[in-house]
Image (cartoon, rainbow, N blue to C red; front, top):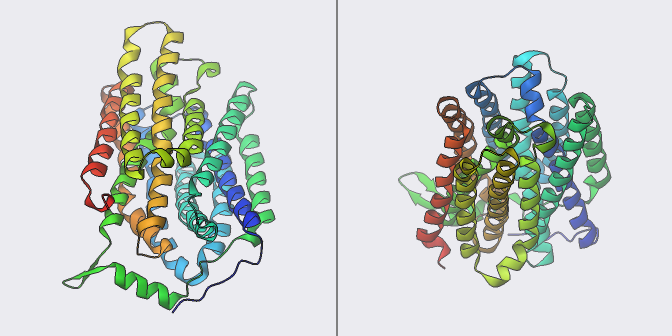
Length: 404
């Protein structure tokens, strides 16, 4: 049995409300990522391995968030979870700027990871609900909004750094903006139009019973694996892009534009995603994305060795980061859209299942990149991560569930 709930507000206002919350999350995220070199310096983190271990606390927090969201979705709904998660995400960002010592920083980063994943799952559940209200594929526009906000946040961060404004004032301002956005838009959020009993029945139909275990849909397993690989790429770029410019190229602060370039191309790619779906199948879009990711890491890790000129190295590495940003931009929106198109499992449950598979990705990148960088240098770490692009192509090409 299902119970359809008609939206009280116009579908346009509901869409703008959800989009504004993606923007709030993007601003907070970019504020954090753009100041990582400063955070690394302020807390005297010199070793690549120690820095990687600190970044490792983020995926630990994200992992802890998975059962929390799974438990809360069926009890209080995604609307209330969005409120809790975005406020927590903003406050934990501010906490990074005020905590004393490396232990306090580690705890703040852990909380940042918890609320980050809670926001991801609950907010994308809202986005897919809006997509169903509209009856067409629009989820990429939400991710484009997030990317635009991240671009703006990266620009703000770049300006703050060059004006010598400390992280305390920067993060305080972004926290206030994010909380204001959710207070203005919370009431327009929607709850899924399916009652709990029906949701459980749909899960039962979507699972294959085997010796007492419930196996998720093959589609969700495959997409979860692609998501895992995408998270390795994303977290590598989020955590190491400006640090890469700082340590490999030895660029001054005015030329540490790696994160900014990457985010601009992520935004550009997400703006083009819906157009790409009209030209290629979504499976093909994922294959192209894997190719661009591979090319980008190869460019930024190998080609900069052909010149000793710092400006040339900045340009070459920026081109590589542009390829990576363009490639990774459409992976997650395409995954979410495929869930909405093909999955038999309810959206909130499907996202939780895929998140449970993909959670390994964020664990891999900080330790792998940190260990390789500490031993051989960041260029070799980026060369190894380039193989992830080939893995995405392989999984998508040989997965049977996307051939239908």
